[in-house]
Length: 274
Image 1 (cartoon, rainbow, N blue to C red):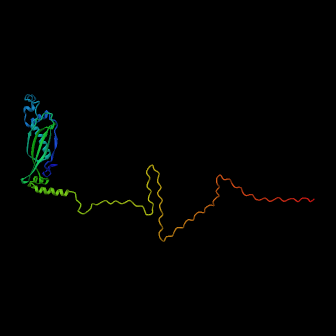
Image 2: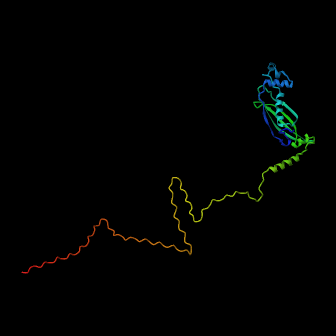
Image 3: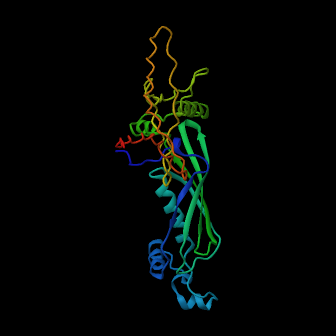
């Protein structure tokens, strides 16, 4: 049964960084358990009075314990790959209570003979003050791919891949994943936008709305369209009959009296003759 999340050589690139591993503060009980597991009961690590008499402020954390932190980081990242070489150099003393953070980076990857694939990893550890306390190097051997692992676990020879074949495979992979470019001379498709419905011929255009706070302005009078040739002329409207003008009287002028009719003389009565 294959290991889950197996790391393969084809997925490793130079410059890949390993996720940092932050260890809890180192305590004296952890130092004692490590001394019992390693069989190293040096007095500088387990005897407080002896360490103080030697000029140290307290016991020292074994350097191999800090190296074990580096190994924990690498094996967790390799996920089942084979570790062929592991070395470390102790730069600074680790004291009880220090918080060690270990980091790593892929320094090189190599195609070896007979289908063997290796990766060189540089690792280092820092304390809580950012000071380098340990530095190491790891060489690991990996399966090239899942197919290579299946072949070797089934008793078949390993899968042999050359650097040229890998470059060709990566080039094909990049071409297949690259976005398609439009052909030369073709224009990209533009979404068609339907224009707004235009008003029918002869219908008056809607009057624009006046801005808020202003009285509406009446639209200008439209001129009548000229009659088409051959069409009957509309009958002219007859002017309305004008009323008879009234005599205007001047204000302030006295009214003229009507002319008096001549009176006839009264008839004389006949006198008696004498």
